[in-house]
Length: 380
Image (cartoon, rainbow, N blue to C red; front, side, top):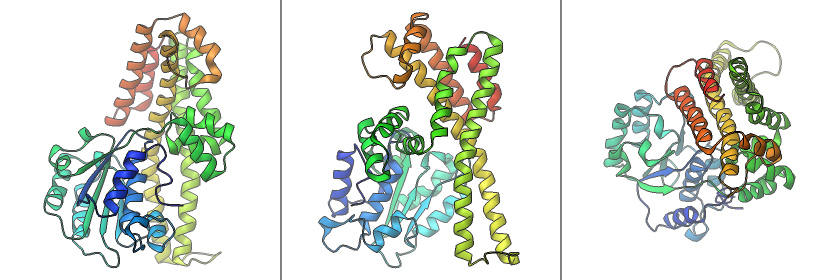
């Protein structure tokens, strides 16, 4: 097993990063781009592990078995920082702290590596704080920025980074990964990969959680019941409810695991009252989790709308002659009936309404329910 095994369907990217890890074409700043689910942050993590791998033979770096690889993949290596935000944006103070960290020499590894997983969540003035550090890099420091597309990063930053462009892997590759790594039944893996539209993380959740699969199917079937304004309002309420339940389901498991890990790290007693110092750290964790929960509902709602969009995508495919495979194969008869009662032009207008709602929810302070109600009314 190597650090590259999880990068399914990305042979060109793996070849590029392998060469750099072996010393050919290595530079101080990299920009990983690709649609959600393409694995850009996983690619950056794998590359960081390969760069600091303990193997002396450069062709073996990225072994996935040595202490350096394991601690980097586990995000516990002292010389590799992973930066992601649970808020809307990365603050300017956080950016300054990154620059300060980047100025330190690595303590034990070959490279000090800064992986910024949400480079698209920085305002222009915040990005400018990083600019000088990337323009005039500290020796032995490598920056890795991740964003959905090059356009999401300032051109001044983009021009100083080597691009790594990822694509969504084929659904068959995602299914194979779920079977190999997670032991998922092949049939379940195939359906989950297709329903997730090749998003690896979402496919894993769908494969593992029957309730998540049921919530998604409920979302996709909603257009079949859309018959007037009252139905549109009810549909909006249902979509927000489904997204909230999905976010809470994911957060509850993650929050509990984080609290257990923190208490173990602090050496907390198994029972009884925690000492004051420990209570403060637990309270801080709980506050961070509350902030994350707010953003996770927004992200979940965006994903729920993406699932809804897959219904109309399939309708359009049918209306255009079934040129490619459907996402929601199990609903083919319903989709075909729906397609007969509208046109491709109408379907495109409905898809545009969903995408506009997604943009409003993720980039403005609009109340999600109002945005979804407006969208649902335009789908009638």
